[in-house]
Length: 102
Image (cartoon, rainbow, N blue to C red; front, side):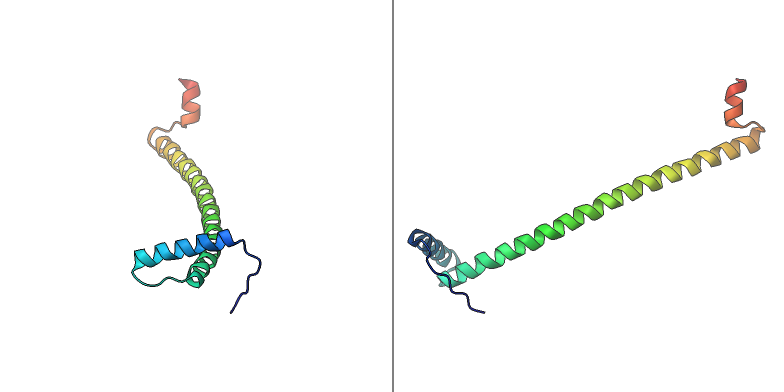
């Protein structure tokens, strides 16, 4: 697809040409103004897409942390109740009641 851009300040065009020349030297091949502008457009679109993906990833990680925290609390409650049960089976004294008697 072609895009026609009009009324660009000549100083910007000179800067684009300068950067194209720098890339030509670095890459060892001709890097045109057109390629440079295409690269800018592609990078802008990819940057926005990357930012969106990062935001979604951060949201998923936050949800995962919340879920793991809830699971940790549930597991700890389960462990505590098992400890109370084993103690009661072994001694015949409920830990909560035993603490009051002591």
